Image 1 (tube, rainbow, N blue to C red):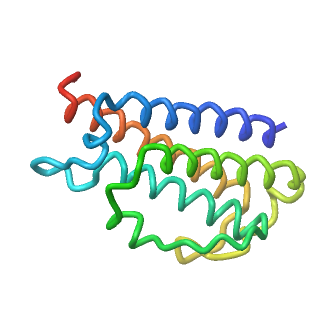
Image 2: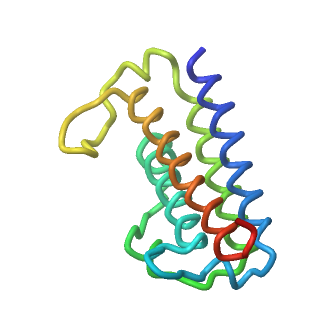
Length: 150
């Protein structure tokens, strides 16, 4: 049951991430920062893709994805098409991993300690959804502020 809910949420919100990236009128705006906005929409997109591909794909799914978190915030400008391909890859990793998991797996301890203490896999996957939504809101605000559509 919760696995189906997680799948629906990740499909919805990664779809929204895709829409936000596509909604930047000028591709260069994806990489702009201003004032106290230190992370561009493009860098936040790279961060979300790296996060999900690592914690879902590599850790739980065994995909072999190797994350470079520092580069997620240092890269740019990456073509919009590459950002969109990354979102598609993240969704594929999330979907493939969730298809392999059982409800009992969600009650097990997540394989690595992320916050310095153990937590269940289910708890961490819900956390990752809230992390996605937090940054998705930042990207939406960034797009409207930088693009003049606030």
